[in-house]
Length: 117
Image (cartoon, rainbow, N blue to C red; front, side):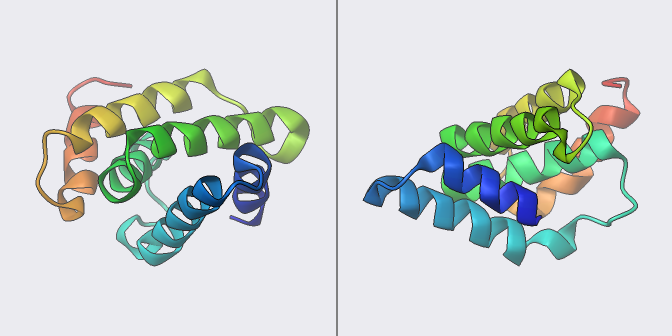
């Protein structure tokens, strides 16, 4: 999580609007982390967190966080995976079809159970 916060700070720079977006993303990830079990399938996690962030902070911010995470992974802070970006895309699309963030996890699970692996 610390790596993600650092990546977000670098990505959004120092403008006031960017700081607000960074704050929204960081607080959303922190506040709703308990909605996603640590043992959940990685792609379902990406889908769910992207869905939650898109609902709370907007699609652009969700995309930015997902890209920042993959850049951090490429720089050696994790394992980069292009399928993570595809999972983020699913989550963002899903956020437009559901009413509440509590629907993100079950909906992402359903997508992956139906063959989006």
